[in-house]
Length: 145
Image 1 (cartoon, rainbow, N blue to C red):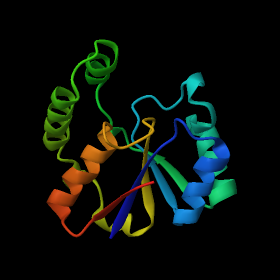
Image 2 (image 1 turned 135 degrees about the horizontal axis):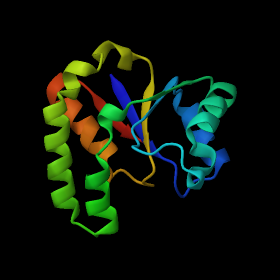
Image 3 (image 1 turned 90 degrees about the vertical axis):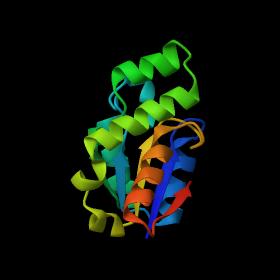
Image 4 (image 1 turned 180 degrees about the vertical axis):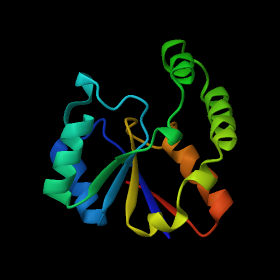
């Protein structure tokens, strides 16, 4: 099974929705803590749901269980914490939340992409989520778009 990830920054709307359409995405799972900021542009929650439906033919779901806490985000972004510390604390959080038990593995048979703001997955929690699920569920191929 393939599960995808994508960030919206450093992409135009045309690039972003084109990538999703090309990959055959049918469901976007928003894993951001804050998904309604005016700064989110075309990826603002309600606009994104509309664009996904109309342009890509995909559904939208916000999954806050897969988002970091505000305290974690502030420590990493505003206080310039280290990625290693952030990734360790975030992985502890999703382990404590037992995300593997709360998510339906079978629902990921629909081509699904996890969305966050980071342009690439190297230093983004969406990668950590997918790696964690792969370790629990096995047989998952992670594709970063």
